[in-house]
Length: 366
Image 1 (spheres, rainbow, N blue to C red):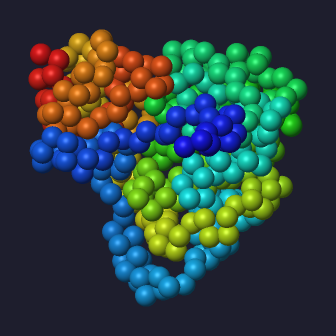
Image 2 (cartoon, helix red, strand yellow; image 1 turned 120 degrees about the vertical axis):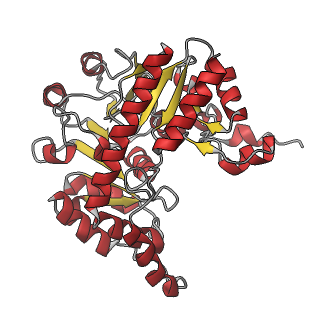
C-alpha cells in the first residue's frame, strides 16, 4: 500500500486512541468460557428501566418503517415540563456524548481551547482534540476539579470548560456555593459545560442543580442522560439544557434523525415514572454503603462518590487485579487511562452482585 491514509487525517485525530468501553459479558464468555458473569463496569442501572418503557416500546413497534420525529416534539414537551424550562432550551442527542460533540463542533476550532480536569471523562479531550482545538488539563485536587486553578487557566482563546458533577470516574462532586462562585468569575464568552450524567443519584445536600442556575448564568450548558438512572443505556438518548440562543446553534448542526424512534418513546415513558428513579436512587445508596463497608473491612481505600460507582484503590497496579477478577467472573473497570493505575471503578449493582464482587475481591487480594 503506497498511500499512508493516516497522514490524510486531521492532526488532532491522528493523536487519538479509540474510546475503550467496559468489557461486554459476551466477550468474557468467549475469552474464558465461563458463565454466571457479573458486569459492574459501565455504570448501568442494575434495576433496569421502568416497566412502563417495555409497554411503550411494544406500542411503537408497528411504526419501525417510519423515520423518527426529528424535532423530538413529544419528548421535549415532557422534558420541558419535568425540568421547568422552555422547550427551545433543549437539544436532544444520541446519548449525552452526542450533545458534548455538538458543543465541540459548534464552538471549538483550531486556535480555540477547552479546559478539563485531570481524571475527567475521556470524551471531553477526545472531542477537543478531534476538532484540532487546544486542550488544557488542570491537575486534580483530591481527585476532583480545582476550580481556582481552572479559573486562573482561562485565556482569550478559551471557549469551553468541561466540568462533570459528579465526575466520572472519580465520583467527586462540587458544592453549590463553590460552583456559583466559580461561574460568577468566568467571562460570559466562555461556555461552562456542566455534565450531570449522574444527577439523579446524588443525595448530597450541597449539590447544585445546574438547570436551576441557567437563568443567572447564560453561558452555562447542562447535559444529562437517560443512560444511567433511567436504565436506557442501550437506546442512547441524552440532552442539553441551555439558553435558547445556544440551543439554537446546537440544533442547527444536530443530525435530523440523531435519536431513533424507540429511544424517544422509551425516554418519554421513563421520564413519566419518577417512582422508579426514586427506587433506583435508594437501591444505589444501599449498595454504595455495602461497597464502602466492604472496602473498609479489606483495609483498602476508595474515593468518596456521589454517583452510582465507587473508585477503589487496590494498593498496587490494578491491571492484574482486574484480570484476576475477570477469571472470577466479575467485570469491573481499570482506569489507568485516567492516570489512576492503582484504581478500579466499580458500578453499584444489585445486593447479590455487590456481594459477589466483594467476595471475588477478597479472594483476589488474598
